[in-house]
Image 1 (cartoon, rainbow, N blue to C red):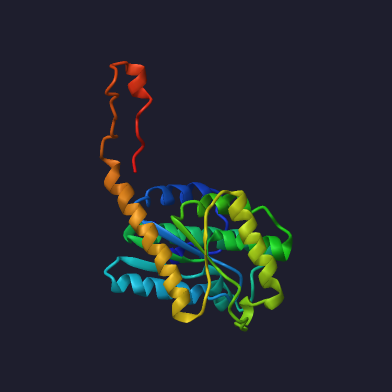
Image 2 (tube, rainbow, N blue to C red):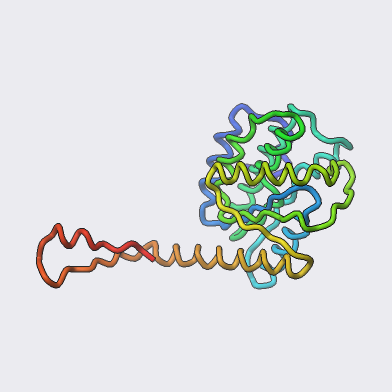
Length: 238
């Protein structure tokens, strides 16, 4: 597939198929998606989570935000037609990382590109694919608005945009039936909240893997030998 930097900012004609196939073969990796409005500590949280997992011996990698790289390289924010390429690049880099790591921490996903395309350019065309791609995340962490706004070069529009952006994120995650956990608090407490959610997700994934090969437990009625009766007592896996 090549280096992640080989996928630049252009929208490819077969990009959707490439992303879907890349994500599909990465189903053994746990993908943690961090989303949130500007200046809510996404990058700090992603870095802290990755480092904490690595200390615990987890083969984890943080995938940085493509938009930040774009702005640094171009010295400007994207034009409307460039948004789709950024969204695809973000998804592809997550998929590539998932090929060779057990846990990937994504410092935003294509959903954030779609949200800002909507908020800034009144363009809602990116939501459909962004939500399909985001659905591959095993855990979504939404950073709360309880941190003070700070300027950060080209990527910051102002404190006034945080609430509408946060609302759009929540609205589209809920409408797509994608669950998320809100991470709030300051410093170590914020990181601790995120780590708790991550560990619960990892434990659930391990239980699912352990149970995958086990036969379902069948309870047999002790009072009769009616097959129809017995069929009513299949118990789901834990």
